[in-house]
Length: 164
Image 1 (cartoon, one colour):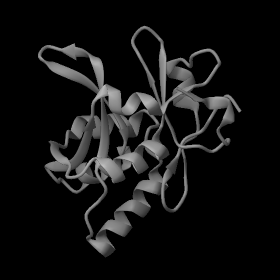
Image 2: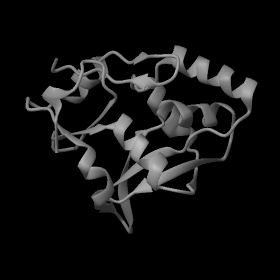
Image 3: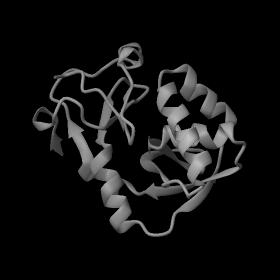
């Protein structure tokens, strides 16, 4: 597990809050680099319009970053990088529970453009756990996480480390 206290203030971190309140923090920049080197051809997943709307209403998406991404996509027409889903050890019915760890903006972009599928790397727990971060502090609540600012650079979405 990565020591979160050693990370710079503006580090790309994905935070998930389980129903029991436990937080999972993942170092997304390093995970993406690992995927680019090791994951090969992505799978294709359906784009869920309701999930995209949910990302917008829950402060997951930084609208100026989405606008930039839309303009870049319209100009270049090059394929987007795959999103990253991480499997959890739990299941809903016969399907494993997954976290969308990287690619929320790309997912919403595809929803806006009415694209039915999006490329995705789906990682087993053994592959993403080495990128888990120990923040060494109390867990965030859903309300606290929603208040965390979503900042953006011209290239990548950057998460806020509220413990710094």
